[in-house]
Amino acid sequence: MELPGAASERGSWGTRLGFILAAVGSAVGLGNMWRFSYVAAEGGGAAFVLLYLLFVTLVGIPVMTSELIIGRMTQVSPIKAIRQLGGASWAPLGWLFVAAGFGLLSYYSVIAGWTMRFATDAMRGAIPQDTATYFNQVGTNLPAIVTHVIFMAITVFIVGRGVKKGLERTALILMPMLFLLLVGLAIWSATLSGGGPGYAYYLKPRLNELLDTAIITDAAGQAFFSLSLGMGAIMTYASYLKSKRNLGREAVTIAATDFGVAFVAGLVVFPIIFHFGLGEAIGLGGVLNTDNTVGTLFITIPPALQSIGSFGNVVIAAFFVMLFFAALTSAISLLEVVVASVIDNWHWPRAGAAVTFGILITLAGLPSALNLNFLTFADRLFGAFFLMLGGLLTAILVGYRALPEADRELAQGLQHPGLRRAWSTAIRYFVPPVLLVVLSFGIKPLWNAFRALIGG
Ligand code: PHE
Image (cartoon, rainbow, N blue to C red; front, top):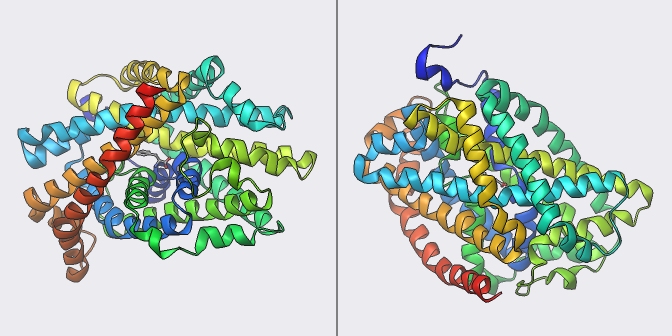
């Protein structure tokens, strides 16, 4: 039953499970595997993981609750929602979200393209032993452009079909499959000999690293990236939400699932790295600044699994198919932010908005497909800095401009006054100062990545 006019273009979730799965689908993606594993390896393993968990809990959950509140309260796309809450002077925050989604998807799709390439090549048994060389062949230039374009086309198709028909059904089928595959791989990893040091590296923090500003920024950036926060993705999904459920609980569910998947992914990857002595190849604990850094997962997983014989190719294919699906549900949410904004602001038809902006984002991704340094820079800028900035401004907006309304909206499903006070205290007094500090830590790495870009 659709309403006539512009409202029919919006749609809404059919079921609570549909919403949760789609939100989890947005959160769980390349961030949990590709990004988590290489940033964790870079940041000393367990120290990073612990800081990451702290940021997810103390910053991520309050910010996610805020995004859910704004979305459900306003029932409009982020740009309009922000303007409704903060007035015209806050409008740039909405555009920051759209810019972040646009920029993030442009290179995200390139990486997602690698997963398609590796999955299909594994099915054909065509991944050679020397994956570093192979990665450089298929990860850039024409092969990368081809898979990038295909991935964007799939994403555009799903987003163009609309909320219920596209997003929800896709998430409903894909997410449970992903969990099963991942747990299976973690069990296989546990049977590897010599995995012990891998678990230790991953789980036993060295205390001095907990104070390392680079690791702190990376952990915070990773929390925003992985939870899909700071750019209106979760906000947009919540704007399709009609039910008056407890948004605090939804935030915890989404964050816990996302953390769980990343954590299990680490349980898959780290024993493999140590069992096969791949630590040096990916620069464990060191500074990773080669082009291969971003390819860590793609370079290390195939030779590991090929070692178990021809069945290994089946597992590799399963692994990358799973990663592809996870990336797809995240990419859908990235494009959705852009498309929802265009629908709400300019009253374009959904399909037209999806195709037009899909093409523009595809073009914007070409530099990342041609140059991995560009991809790394885009990841630092859009995938970490923009998101943390968006999260900071969202917290200030909610905490200082719209707290009474936001609290009333939260109270619809969360009666407990103490929990609501904990949330509002966090969003006013904890999240903004912490993010300010972390953002200031992040300026130098961003600058370095920029220099690496223009220098290389
Ligand atoms: N959370 C997604 C991932 O981990 C990426 C993403 C970021 C999606 C921001 C939407 C918004 O892969």
